[in-house]
Length: 221
Image 1 (cartoon, rainbow, N blue to C red):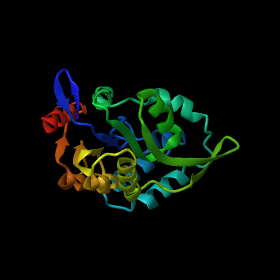
Image 2: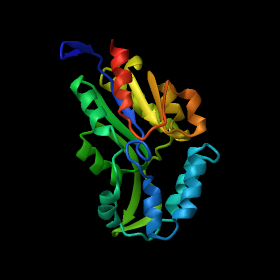
Image 3: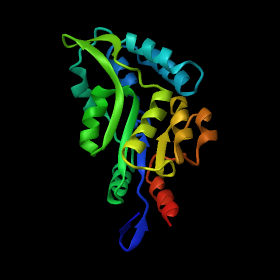
């Protein structure tokens, strides 16, 4: 622990999901809107997040619909993305305590990497959309980041940076966050799908992640 304002504060490794958690939107839906397929993609996204269909299969199917879309779209896309309320304050709290903040996304590195720099994230991992000659091929390049990958990565980050299991905090909203929340010391479900609720120590129904700060302060006392 470290002291802030004369009070002992516990150090945490905080790991957040990205789409509909760190940010308000689902990036895949914003991309699909560019090719006129947002409604079709949203149905698949909702089913995958509810655990009704396989995440990996749904991801590949949705990404396939983006074939031919110019990668320059990401510059405009980043202007549309809204950071979830309470996120900057939560990151600041973790950093003040000497902890680390990471983000693991079933979304895309083309969005998460600049967001990580903007927000001061210490660690991040996401899928990489394959781009050839400035155009999306409709494929994922490299390993797919799915539910199991999220859990393994969080535990690897904890071990590599000297955090005990009890000092890991995971925040997510859908079925592909179940394994990560189950593997964490403190699990937060943010406006969650029903499939995630049984695995949460804290459920937030509002639009801000600021309540997490109060909960972590209580755990430090």
